[in-house]
Image (cartoon, rainbow, N blue to C red; front, side, top):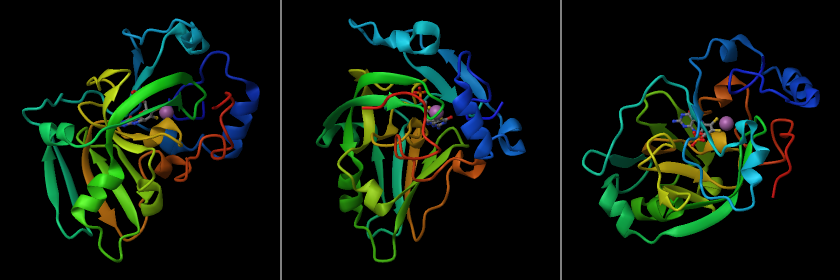
Length: 238
Ligand SMILES: Nc1nc2c(c(=O)[nH]1)N[C@H]1C(S)=C(S)[C@@H](COP(=O)(O)O)O[C@H]1N2
Ligand SMILES: [Mo]
């Protein structure tokens, strides 16, 4: 086996296995990773077209977590901290994030391992808005994301982080982001493979350089543009 989910999904085209093997993703770091797939989504978004049948198991999302369990957070105890190379370090609570202007984006979700969920709505606060509010200092060139699962990390360059299609998502599939999908707040990086969209987001830190995230330490690209990175996935993309 060679990739992110620690398994070789049934029906995975040989081509992808070969490509991933060539990328060296079968390295021991992956095999040893504390990987768990959380099972298949039980509550799938309404899908009149039946396109979720594209996915293994005929369902919508898979749940992914690199740790066994994550203690849920609610509006009572959720906080999101913006710090590092900023003029005004800030800690937000959920109602404060909910009160900010929200943007809605509907794109395909694409996991680098090949599964895809078409036309999935996400809504939330533009990361660019929080960066502006914090006042990014000279010398900052990247953003590091941390998660209250205590394990996962991600990163973006400052230019990527400022894109219009990068959100702190409060809603997904027209409902609050569920705990299993990384709520109450997850990152949503629309133009990149879904591993960039860190779940259970708790920290945003401005740094002088990109610090590779969890999967990037295990062989995946930090610039994870859909269709242009990791030797590409094998599913069509929008
Ligand atoms: N904190 C955290 N974020 C994460 C992950 C994870 O394991 N932990 N997995 C990533 C990967 S590989 C994918 S495909 C998506 C899966 O999101 P979902 O569980 O909502 O389908 O979350 C990404 N963000
Ligand atoms: Mo993924």
